[in-house]
Image 1: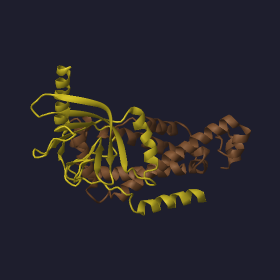
Image 2: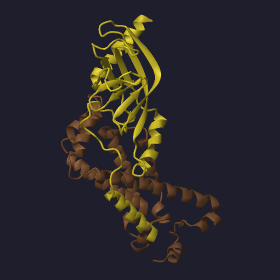
Image 3: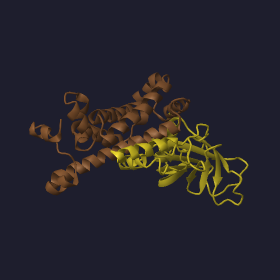
Image 4: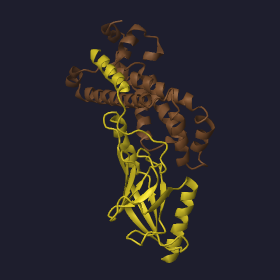
Length: 176
Length: 176
């Protein structure tokens, strides 16, 4: 009985303790959550017109996929330890669509990629680049001037995202 | 009513102890496993409850912002989206209170073995409501099954307050 009381006191103290390191920020321009396991996010990034051509295509669409069933079940462990070790980053499977120009209808797809949602620095890390969730700016990782963004990203809504992916897949199928 | 009297009446349930594990290994181990599962499950709910109070579910607009954000991640035509928009968001404060205090009650019931079957039912119901409310993922399935298991089995009698309370109030359904 005393042990149960001790457990209760510890839990109550936990409720009064400072929160873990990550606070939910509802003002992010790119609202991709590190906690969502069933989200399918479509992030459209476009390079600034005045940028010289670099390694990254002018338009890139990052499709962050939902977790697998087993990965979703595995989050039970994260629920159990959430007050000891809050979740500070999330790895998401991703498909990348590289578009040469907005009206070209030409696109390439790269599957089996991975994005990392960094909840502490509020960034989405993708191959060769990252997106600042606060303002949606797109940065190239190995650029000479890493402080200057190469473009701007937009998180598309549910319907707009689905329509864009459908049009990209159609364009890719027609090319093949 | 003492344990001996209850046993003589043929209504005794085994109390979990290491002596039971030694004398009846299969039964003792099985009961021990389920008791540990119950307590871990209760600690998971306790962690969730702590999280709710840390984020001030009761007196801030955090629930409203959270549910509104979740709505943007769902298919607008889905039942969950309509349920969120039609009921949860307009009553976000009430829902916040129900979730926060509900998790506290479930955690107390499961960790201390108090009104355990009702706590198990409550946990399964809460998980189902999370799913309906747009927070479905595959982890809810094993969580609901654990809740049902606790509802069906007398785990509070194996280790918990229900055992003594049932002896004191044998006709009360809360402690059966």
